[in-house]
Image 1 (cartoon, rainbow, N blue to C red):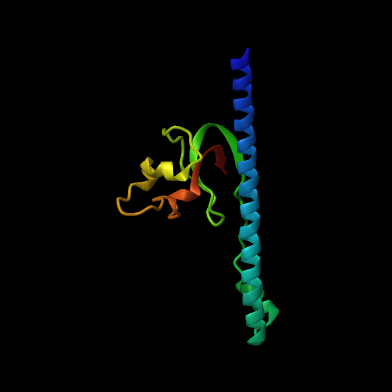
Image 2: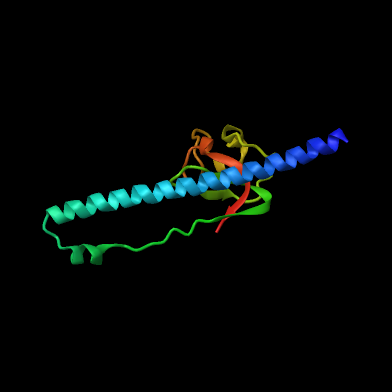
Length: 136
């Protein structure tokens, strides 16, 4: 009886951790958008000060859309939590599930002998964790 209760608590904890991770990624994405908007505003202010018209500035704008969304999956992936990254670096990682990025040094994402960065995204290994989510 007690074993079932612990098992249920573990499942509930895992689900809660996945929800927190997804919320953290959404907040990081919002922060990335805020920084990008701030940089765009500074650039526009500088161009306006140089006498470049708003119409000319708008013609130079590269339009892009943030499409990073997360959904739960039934396996764990190695994901990067860096706010400027937010990507799956290793799908269906076979290492034991861990939240400790330093433990992922043994993962193939870090096959650089003298470097502690991911070969997929270039971020530090400490920015990575296992999660049961994927991005689309």
